[in-house]
Amino acid sequence: MSTHYDVIVIGGGPAGYPAAIRAAQNKLSVACIDEWQNFDGSYAFGGTCLNAGCIPSKALLESSELFQRAQHEFATHGIQVGEVKLDLAAMQRRRAAIVKTMTGGILAVFKSNGVVGIQGHGRLLAGNQVEVTAPDGTKTLISAKDVVLASGSTPIRLKTVPHDGKFIVDSWNALEFDAVPKRLGVIGAGVIGLELGSVWRRLGSEVTVLEAMDQFLAVADQTIAKEAQRHFKKQGLDIKLGAKVSSAAVAGDLVNVVYVDKQGEHTLQVDKLIVAVGRRPFTEGLLAADSGVELDARGFIQVDEHCRTSVPHVWAVGDVVRGPMLAHKGKEEGVMVADLIAGLFAEVNYKVVPSVIYTAPEIAWVGQTEEQVKAGGRAYKVGSFPFAASGRARAMEAGQGMAKIISASDDDEILGIHVIGPMAGELIAEAVLAMEYSASTEDLQRTIHAHPTLSEALHEAALAVDKRAIDAINR
Ligand code: FAD
Ligand code: AMP
Image (cartoon, rainbow, N blue to C red; front, top):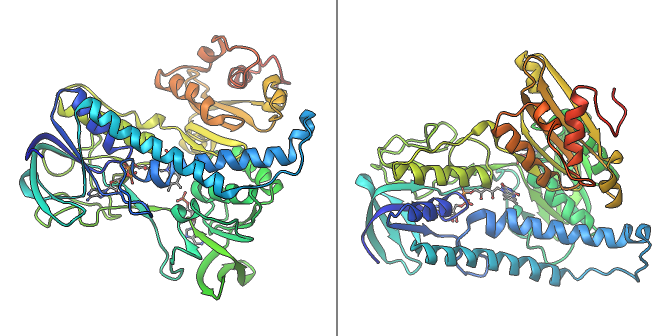
């Protein structure tokens, strides 16, 4: 192992590994250090996203959705099948195999770009020196002109809800259940709670989601949130709003969950309890006392809009810095930093970071919600189009939800696009591109969309902004 590099990246998740690859593409010598260890003791690059987040959750969401459709939808298509049986072990083997292939892929890309991947713990010392502790405990000192910190985040734990990894679990444990819990409790109706609740509901659990806030999906446009809430209720997800969990305790093979709502205190008995109350930045053991890197009041590494920390030539990207905790946001920051280090122009447009919730129907948005636009005081127009009027959605037996576009009354600039419906997470890419190029709704109106596709819903929603939709009644 060499002892000096142009760039050292600490953390090999979706923020760190792209930073390493782009730095190598910029002809810099690069090492990327990562300490991720799986439950079976194996080490793997890819961080939370590939090992315990985005990818395994999407694998299970897809499998559970197919299970659900085979049971309840095939007959509508005229397909008669016998009894549909769940083989959870096979489903979990598929999930694990996908994760293994994807994390292995990072090593292959590292190799082809000449990135040195180091498995172990990295600690930033003063003067851009990094102490590496290998899995066997051996310590080595390496240094670099630039260091990128990408140590990610970790689930928030509640003191009064003691995690044991068996009955009271986090999102990672919940992706690796080897049996379907009969009764499942979820604390937190955020993105992770809703996705995991959906997986296990579809596979047969009775799911109760306890959410402290009175408003459902407060981060989303409320027209979309209301529509989502209706669908989740129909699917049997029991979402209790204004229900703040105060404590939980394991008793034998059960968990007693105490929560408080307007009516008073209640106890819910479940077989497993998932704590999904958010994530916090992870900086444990990352910074020596004299590294000079400053954290903000909430424990995030303090950075400017270009991800520069308080120390020259030390950068920080991804979940460990401010902004949405999303893999694609971290990736763009990693790539930006690697380009800036190489002296190239780079920036991240934080105004157009898309959000996706991979439930059924999917929910996706970019830009401002109608509530935010209203609060900002700018006059606006809204157009929406229901998937019930989309031929393709109907053909897919997925005519639920809508696309909604908000644009400025003065110059027609698109301010926000919100979709709930089939493949919303894919459809939102067009919205992101439109907003990245500061498109107006007229630009979308004049863009040809293939027929019959789901994307026509965005076209029609843009037309509806000016009450000129063709395939739906203009209101
Ligand atoms: P991480 O992915 O957390 O990676 C950090 C890496 O650094 C880890 O491997 C860690 O072990 C390592 N590390 C930390 N400290 C050190 C050190 N000192 N030395 C060496 N290594 C270190 N986001 C999406 O955009 N889409 C989704 O669909 C999505 N689904 C999710 C589902 C779940 C269940 C969860 C939990 C998260 C999901 N996320 C999703 C969020 C996404 O996983 C994170 O935003 C993303 O992983 C952040 O990337 P990161 O590189 O900043 O950090
Ligand atoms: P997110 O931050 O999007 O992952 O969502 C986490 C959710 O958990 C938020 O909507 C919080 O309101 C909710 N939450 C946090 N603590 C509690 C608690 N003690 N009881 C119920 N819900 C909680």
